[in-house]
Length: 358
Image (tube, helix red, strand yellow):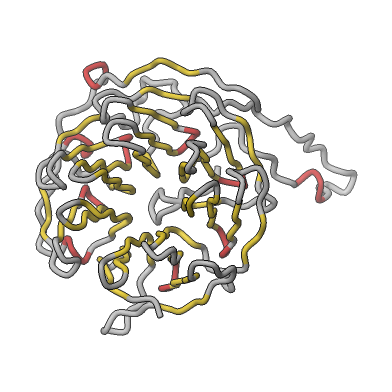
């Protein structure tokens, strides 16, 4: 399996719907397990590894390592919120004042008051007694299409859906089967030819991102170019394959049936027909792209390693690039972006960054 994205875990035909709602009481979790331990309020949490950010009715919520959840009304000053986990949080989504944060150990948290108070909706740390492939899998992305309907994707093809604001989560399957095994027979010289060393598609790829088009089509992207599409709310899925066989780390809905996929080595692809076909977009970089957002004016912003920030104005095709640095000269590894009234807020391994796009 490839490495998971977002720094520390953040890089077919019709499928059956598995009606297996999560029941926390069925798990035997030690009381001192980090997944169910209260977060520690730390003085430098605002300058720690932050992996995702969302805008709420009251301001902004950023999440990251050790269960850190940071709140801000203006994107400049931050206050840490107490949450019922110390697991790293990789993703956050908001619908008004309703906020969901998720991450390692299958943790999903919920806040009804824009992040001030939190409750744990789901937790599934690794267990030696479980034979499930998704045992202990982290959640890598979440998508809420309404205050009650939402989706979560993660490692080893983890795919969950809720229709009651996260009170219960049902496991879905994108389907697919393991690729035929490669015959690794060595030649007389004891070496393998190139065809024998080619990597096939993963049977249960990590799912890194999920997005929804205006018509309601769901798209999921993951490692090694794996992709899936559903036109019925996740009940059944068809398999997609990008022209590029590398991992995609993010998806952005651009309006209508247009969706942008981005990921490894600066690769960016766009579909204008909900995944029916894809074309390559020149990014001008070979730096891996981890997160992004679409501004209210249609500007697309993508961020990645080495302070990389790409921007594309509405109606344009190519991106322009620049590198973000702190006043101290440090170059952050950027992981996510969200629009503000005057620019953009970025998360990084050194906290948040305020920036504008020229």
